[in-house]
Length: 347
Image 1 (cartoon, one colour):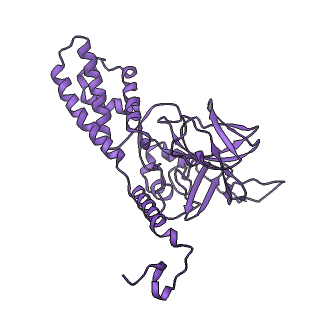
Image 2 (cartoon, helix red, strand yellow; image 1 turned 90 degrees about the vertical axis):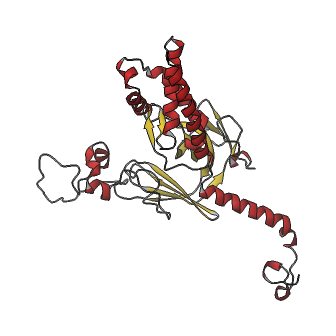
Image 3 (cartoon, helix red, strand yellow; image 1 turned 90 degrees about the horizontal axis):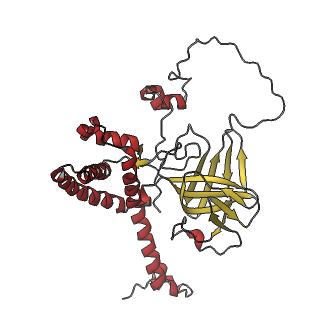
């Protein structure tokens, strides 16, 4: 599965607004009905496949052998049982007892500028035009860039929105970092395999389908059921194409937008044609552009990225090693004669 953290999205209403601008005559006559067109965008989301869905991570608290899956859950990628962890309490973390401190008095203006340092408020700046100021752009970016190295203080996603989960792989070692709402950081040092029963919500190449372990789980009616009574489960999944309010989302990409827009225009003209309007010439033109836009969109979505090509190269390399060299692993020849890795220097 290609983990997608960088693709941008926009609501369906914004897509429909762009189409209305191109077909302003129909928009002025109120002949564009959103309820007739939303199913077209949903069909295209399904046509482009899971690669346009955003990969999400969460830690679930299993209680009485079950836990509710996230509301935006769409497809199961993989999961682990969280074992031992280290708890680091940071600023705003939990504290016990009574703590009285003397705070120096400082006069503040009645109207606080939320965009001026050091009073920058991430949520406020994200919701108003001050996000373009130097304070918000430099000190509190809207979306953190993808780090080149593992940094527990800067995981994927928005640093202004806790809680956050960060899964990192270094060779044969997995590291799981969880940032809680209280500001505390949990670092899980042990991840236990979890075997899943096959279902429609699980990817066919999911590694959890092939684990040989006593801990098992299955998905039913929006819940994750487990054979153990309590515990924590790390879940990596593909999120549904909708926002927190349940509104439909579509990808916002220059090479994908034409596919969505021409598909909606084609449905609009088709409805007019079925109602007796003479739009056959325009409908024929739009259908030609739609076919070209669909081919371009599918070509972009199905093209492997560099990371997938690298994984394919390593898979082929290991397969060739197991086929031609692994059989001689138990034999230890003279390295001075055979050279490196037991390969003979004499042809």
